[in-house]
Image (tube, rainbow, N blue to C red; front, side, top):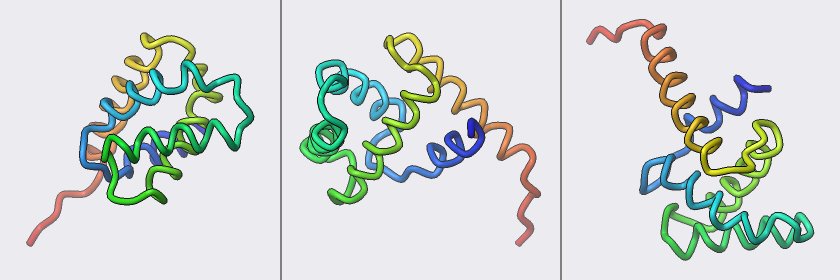
Length: 105
């Protein structure tokens, strides 16, 4: 599960760095975490959309869904843990790019 979540996070295409998105979601979710899941998802996606982090609302919804799964799996209850996840993602990307074959062309 950990690898799948990190891979999905590594593939996120946004207008800003993923760390900015994760830290912003942690802030947005601090007030929304007790709401029903459908309302929470809507609030998070709307927050991302208003900040223009993604090109469309569907991408914002997908990121909100991913955030909820990340938060549940990694236990991201404090901004410090979000920063640890950002650091872990950077290492994951480095390891993935180091292990991928070099392109010749």
